[in-house]
Length: 267
Image (cartoon, rainbow, N blue to C red; front, side, top):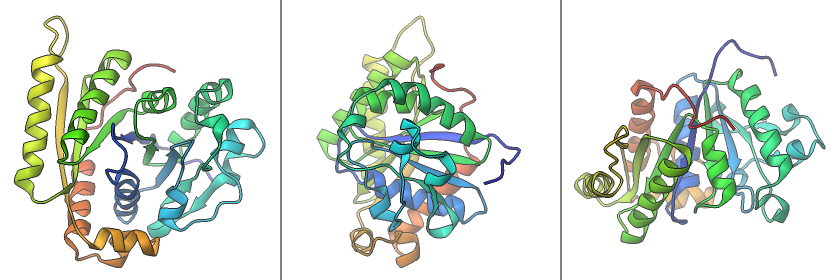
């Protein structure tokens, strides 16, 4: 793979709570960005329970785990996916990488630095929760996108994720996508509630305020689970569906949004 003269926007797409549709959303968002001609790589950073390969119907012979351990070259683990995107998959059930290791801490920043010169977008599909691996992976990204649903548990965990990352990584800017919302008023309610709680409990008079930018929402749409069962992006199986149109709008928002210039901290 040739090295392109560019510097990628790196985005960690994460959620406090599991089951919010984060991986499927990430896959479709990457597809939409790739279809604009952007060079897009998704990195499956859910290193204990990876399933991006299933969602995108790709079958890598080696994964990120072998790259980190030094068993194979980086290029050998990157495979083409639908819509022109590329995938760096991980393995599921790999207990050694479900927790922080020396190899992971040392090798992952090197890999990210190499890949930043080859792509326009690097999307990290992190695991759910606040494990050391999730936080470390997110720390390597310039931007963090929180995925939440209107469920109270999801909103609570989204706030907790923002709080921890703001505290441990000195991040002041986050973006929000509300998934599986019945309509936009409900999605805006989620965004407004989170912004209100952040302003109330995470304000620090001596520091810049924490910003949570609302990127948009994806409606609860039966086309999405049907696409998952077919292991194909909804952007392909049902491009006129409400979910696909919403994801296309999100991709356009990302294209026009200002990129965060630096990572949270140097790893």
